[in-house]
Length: 267
Length: 264
Image (tube, rainbow over the protein chains, first blue to last red):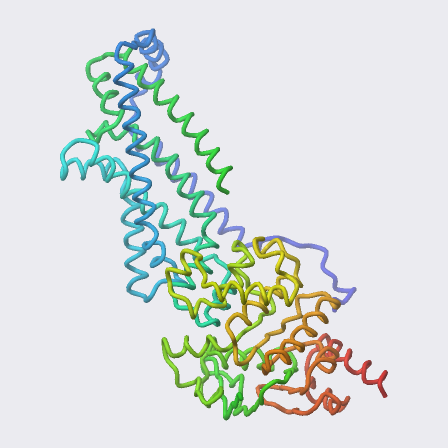
């Protein structure tokens, strides 16, 4: 019981020591930003010049040149296919990875670390860098693009799916273990149904992301619409570049709608 | 017949949760296990089907020493031990039929489980049992669409699908309202008679225990300190079982004492 005589009248969220600590953290953050700003070498003349340049570029892009529209649309379809195939394969491959990377399902500590190693190495390398690597191995083209997107997606899907497995309700698992069901059957009946919603939403989200990523793969020679964009920019064919950019914009918007419709249907 | 002898369970290096516990249950009877939270009731039940690994002692079910089993043998033995849970422990996103059939997972091949192609006799048995407990019309509904009492019936049918030699029920009515709770206790009692099953029930509601059980086992700090017919559970025995527990738990135990006063 609090003695009424000595009931405190002042209260502070933080102790003086905590306040000092917080102040130092703010100070440090500001110092870091200031240092970052002073360390980069900005040519300010080019920055002030940019509105004029933008207008100039825009002028050269108009009107968009549609003579190669047939080819552009065809390659755009190829881009969609890269994203779709890569997502499908990545989804399948990421299932066992998620299983061994989740703490509550992994067979032992070695498999847990193996799973985490696969996830981290897949995620820490950007799609473009994977693409550079695979272009070097398989030569330029669509195969390198599919593999690049797939390798990056395994980490993404595997990580989110693994976390979903770790967050499942343990109780149905216990109940099925009590019936004498084997490990595989417990997974199928108690774990799989619980992670199904996450599985679908993550797969659709990744397909959506992959659609965007596959449009830039061509910049490093890994197939898709980026190849044509690169070609147009290199030859200063800004009118065709404009057509490609508009086509990509349309594709991404359509992809967004498709993903939204799928999400609504499945979940 | 279930024969537990010198059962010890210790978590880590602490005080044992179960201390040299002996318990024998003959066939076809309802045994209610009462005791304060932390007395070891749940651990005792889970030691029987080895969801919890006993530290020492023997558990003999119809001539099989359950504590000695490993891997496939253990799964084989678990098929004959049905369990019912406080939280029902159903798979919410599966249908009632799938939940019920998951009681047969230990018996059917993997492809049948994957394809949901359950054997004809299992489907018939499922419908018979669901009809028996009044949930047959829910077969195609998702488990999470049912009410608490209905969900527990699914849990009961799942356990019965195993063709069990014994039923373990861990606080089966603690998540249910009083009326539904009585219905489930009544159901367990009549099923015990129908299938000649011994049923071990952990229960907090002492009044229910006295009404539905053939025998009451009182646990305190990992030991059995009371074991007799319900009529023998008097105020003195209650005091001993629930001695030294927090006030809330004594209030819960008090329900039995009022019942006692009424019958006296």
